[in-house]
Image 1 (cartoon, rainbow, N blue to C red):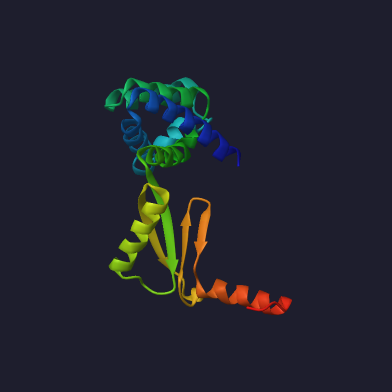
Image 2: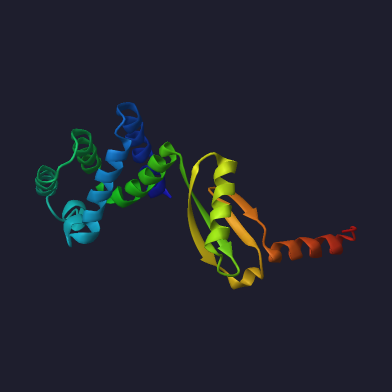
Length: 183
């Protein structure tokens, strides 16, 4: 939980700088690239985060990598700050949260659709258009299947859940009948 709070705080600080200077998308790309080094360069993350190594030596490794990369001054300062505050280990989470903030800044919202069967591309397009109209933003959809739904779809946009599944409708009907109410 603490990791999430720390990651959000740093990502929000960087997005504020990005909004102010208009380089939020550039910072998104740079941050993703550096976070990607943790995954592609074996030992890089350990070289920066392992307390068994001398802190000055670890900082020299970071400085050498930053000198080799074509990053903005702000990003180099940001990464150095993360290192100095012993937060460089949170880089993946910061990058992930920053990406969401940058998408939000561009007016892009991520949504997911879960359906019982595979949806046609026409149906997906119609749902995407309806969600875009409802939110006033560009929608990026993630589509999954769940055979337990029986039919219908469940759509999630952030914290909002639009449940149009047959399973939920049957459960609601069952609750209504149990209470003795007229349907």
